[in-house]
Length: 85
Image 1 (cartoon, one colour):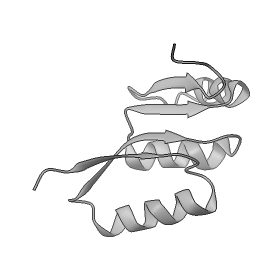
Image 2 (spheres, one colour):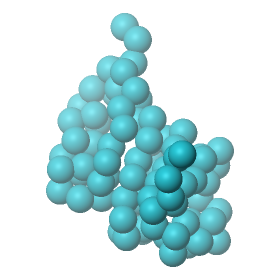
Image 3 (cartoon, helix red, strand yellow):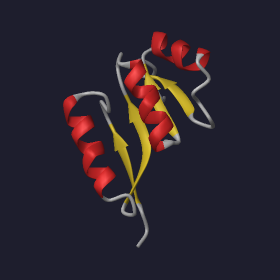
Image 4 (tube, helix red, strand yellow):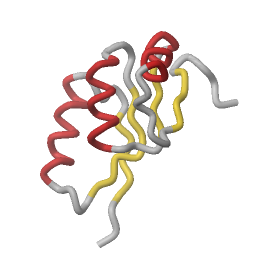
């Protein structure tokens, strides 16, 4: 069975954390494709390390923190405040 890509909006919040718990129960069914978070950068870094998403969006100060700590490993990092237009 092909894995379904999943985008988790607010991955460090209650709903995001519970969604990731469900994904953990079905590792062959889901691929965490993108994570977004507002300001819980420490938890977001843990999630990046565990799930290896292709994309991550976080506020600007969080971007600097993640870049400084070298936790990207091929992840494309975006500012949650920017527009994709």
